[in-house]
Image 1 (cartoon, rainbow, N blue to C red):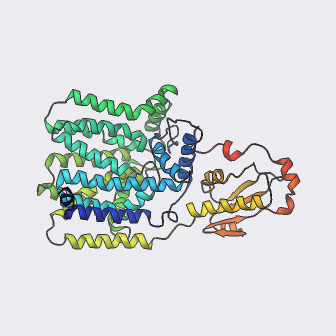
Image 2: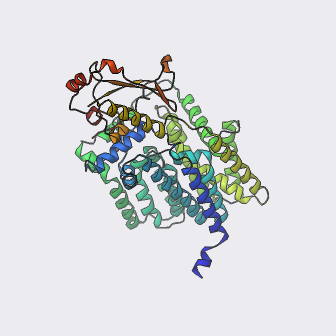
Image 3: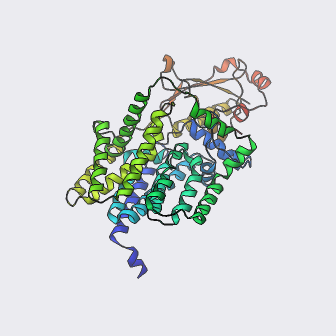
Amino acid sequence: MKLRKLITKENILLAAILVLALALRIYQAKERFLYNHDNDLASWIVKDIVVNRHYRLIGQMTSTMGIFIGPLYYYYLVPFYLITKMDPIGGVYAITFLGLASILSFYFVFLRLFGKKAGLIASLVYAVSYAMVFNDREVVPTMPVVMWSVWYFYAINLFLKGKRGGYLLSGILIGLIWHLNMALILLLPLIPVSIYLSKKRVDWAEAGKGLIGTFLFSLPLILFELRHNFSQTKAFIVSLTTEQNAVFTLVERFQRVVTLTGKNLSSMIFANSVDFPTTLLVAIFLGLLIYLVYKKAIKKHLFYLMVVWLALYVAFFSIYSKVLSEYYLSGLAIIWITVLALSLARLKKGALLLLLLFLGLNLNAFFVSSVNRSGYVERKEIVRVIEEDRKEHNYPCISISYITSPGYDLGYRYFFYLAGTPLNKISDKVPVYTIIFPLGKDSVQEDRAIGAIGLIYPDYKRYPLETVKANCSPENINLTGDMFGYTQ
């Protein structure tokens, strides 16, 4: 009987959505893994935890000087790296699990708040959306921001209904902010606003449980700040009070927020396949939000909170002087998916056609998108080729140079560590292997091409083996040299 209860139309559809989502997230997993400096840093941090037994309080440094991301993501990666024998592909599998958890989160939350139909539509949108698929394929600590926002959306709804569970859930989520993206702090005012709108008194006993949840998940931050004289707190204050970019005026920053919001929304729905005016698209979705309130698909108090949610992002990033990037606005995805899911759920006719059109656009965009041939596969292979050649010539050490633009010389070091390649500083006594990206950079001719990456072998005549042996330092700079964004 229990098995029959599980085999329902909704559960079959949800299972189909999960299978489709899994396929989109693991298809060409290695080929489409855009391995770069952030992934290299993550690998070194995992190695530091596993090999060096260094139980870290911080992850990598963020784009704001002096502020680090929390370590939780890197601890989460550890078992997946162990399964793959410390290969970075473990990170792809780890993120894939989080992507599937995000889909289940959408279904659970929307099922509880808006019903089964809305739950299935929201899950499908997240599962198939071109923007969401590539968000889930980007192996970075900020990837779970959308899932965080779904549960925060649920927490404020619990507050609106006077449910005690909102305190503990929001407390845990607040504790996770440092581990994901500090921009999520912007949404904290929604808690007192939702409690006020509920017309319920604060339950101090439950609030205490929430504070315990915040404390436990923020413990690495607290310990780090106590140990380092509150260095991150000071850096955070400086970042908020110092002009970081005076190029844009207030109006220009506001326009940039609206433009990037529309760009994210268009990418989520149209997969960049339709040239639709982004500002108009935002206006249409805001109009749909008002329509849903008018039709009582969204209750008035929840509407107020959604408006405040949007306003907090727009106001802060219009004032904040740092140049805004799209990923800072990931916390808005829940608003747009809510509007889209509820609008489609209300349609008696045409909903299926629109969903099929959505599926067609996004699946087509995914499968016709080109593979960037300078990622995981190519970088790992270029390092393997270099190490193979080094062994063939019995060089006790080598050095690496790069012909590329600044920043593109990063993202190789962990592969050299896995290969066991002893690296020395560049000198005329140590053979130099040169990596070129992209091919033809500065009109330089490579000896070998692997994807979009080229390799120039050393001039072997210049490096007699005895000379190399005499000049190889015992220090492996790949293990001891500084790494941008990495702090021991």
